[in-house]
Image 1 (cartoon, rainbow, N blue to C red):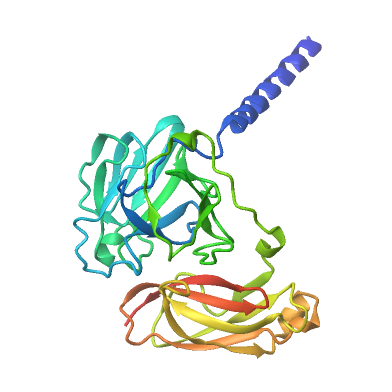
Image 2: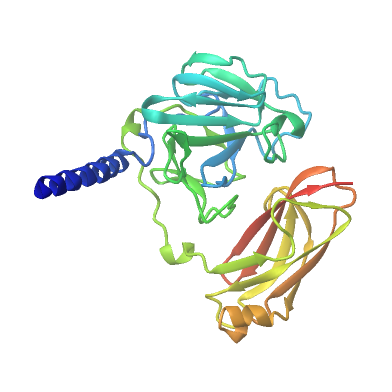
Length: 342
């Protein structure tokens, strides 16, 4: 009886473990490359920005460069379904579409949603992009201009979209949120490559050859390796601010040959370099003995930065601060979301 009981217990343990492992193994990393088109009408050209979201699950699209201003007429700027499915309206400015095999596409910062539910076909109009900050961010979050926030889920969970294929174009995510370096963040199809914020992206629908994912352009792994480290220790993400705010922290480049490896720290508001507003250069090379001790390297001692940011005159509400550090190789950045009050 003891042997039977032990065998039963072992069998139960195996059944508990292996089905879960099998389900995880069967769970696809990304939808098939011929499932999704770009979420704007076939035949139109929009632009895109860097990957973002808590799990790098989203990318923004909008018309032209620069994107439309708030209160522009967006009544003819249509968001469309990326694939056939079933609509689920989540708010006045957001919806999801359920597709095959647990895949869901997310559409946020929209208005004038045409239907709350029911089936929809690929490339069918579903909403306009919202033209006021209040409507665009009705569920929370942040928007600097009229655009579509497009995301991906599988079985209700956010999915990182590095490698996701839309209308035959695949996404190369880059280092982090809103990366604007075309050396790291881009869309590619065969040997074609498009850069964020600048290159027009023409939606030609899903090509017949999309059943096979496009070849990725050659990357120099060493060039893409992240070696810069930026820490903002005097401004918490999501902080409420007013008046003059001290933005303080430190920045180093671990691959730098001498000193801290960083020579400039720049700040931009409500968008990355090339899109946001440049608000100033921080004082750099301030003494940070604590950083040198923490990183066990005295060359990182002169790594502190500080900037007095005057928030007076800014529109109340949520804003995004981009803090860039310049290294010998490139610019790297981190972001802080803040709420400005009068």
